[in-house]
Length: 113
Image (cartoon, rainbow, N blue to C red; front, side):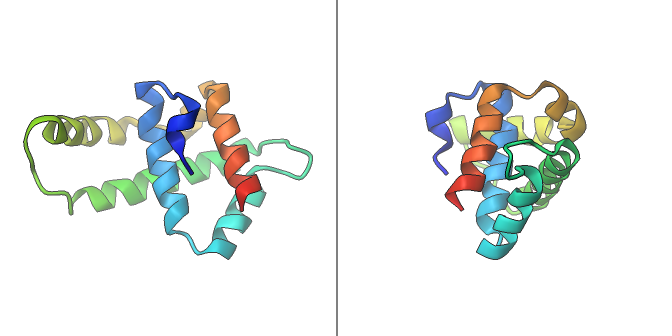
């Protein structure tokens, strides 16, 4: 999914990038099942299921951070930002205040298969 088309704020990019990367790593059938638990046929979003997705994506991203090598310049600044901010992400709190753009992103993920 092209997350740039949604125009996310910097604070949301961390969550969106983690979720997007996590979904890309799932087998297609698991991805469909996961998203169908979140986005119901009537378009209703299941908050607890979305919270679980965000928390799973956060955990997977934190585990993969260990493999990232230190770099220079913008890369190092980005890596430092991710390492500092990722542990502070709280799926339940994010879902309570998530932007409409994030809902569109999740819905689009579910409809794109």
